[in-house]
Length: 279
Image (cartoon, rainbow, N blue to C red; front, side, top):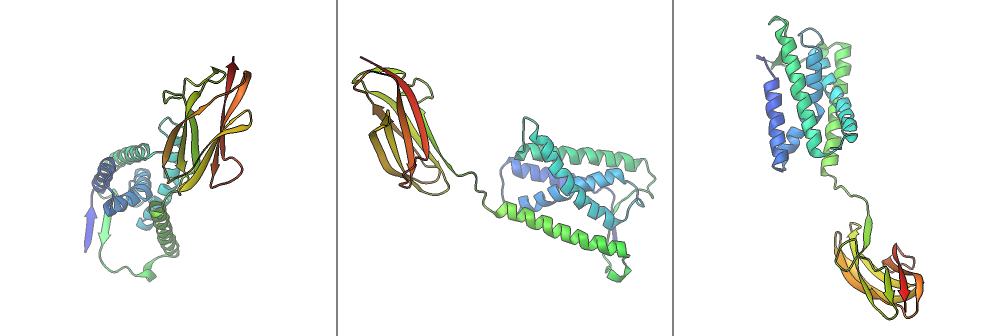
């Protein structure tokens, strides 16, 4: 049984737009993965090959499929590299839109070039349901077939691994000082002897695990106050108002805020303010 598809790009564009809708509406699941794999690994290369070789006899079917996978794997990273130098960067929506525009543009070019050929010369996707005999393949076709299967397995396996493996970002703890109003401004710059000044000390855990912290406030190297220990889970946040004072006049008094992790003796983070103390 032989089936010919006159315009395969109607299916390609339908599947691409369906994937875009799933992504825009944040619908996850098997359908999104099933559509995303050919959208990245096959459609761009196939559209490019179709635009370059619109005639039936330009290249055979196995070469067309193999080159489609190969060019997709080559073109998509290049587009990502180009996006990296634009204000949009390599993010989901810019990549989706870029690949969608590329596929549509190449599809239009392909249809235009095919229409300039006679009906008999135009390439059409043909599905032959009879049993394919391995011995009837040429040596080149056998090599391309093995390479194609290996490429597909490797590419699908790589994407599956990337999609299913939890992504662990950089591990660090955020440590900051805010002014009394809760903003990064209005820090104490001068004070009188015996007067207390306040700031807000903030800690945010981005370590991907629970961490126990201790904080110290030091004035000119002397410990004036200890905070904690307190434990924060991943993405846990703690803000606490701390005060400090001085009993003697001092120009450019150094007020330090030190953060320690898990009882370590060396500070993990340190911040400081310079304050003038007057009579």
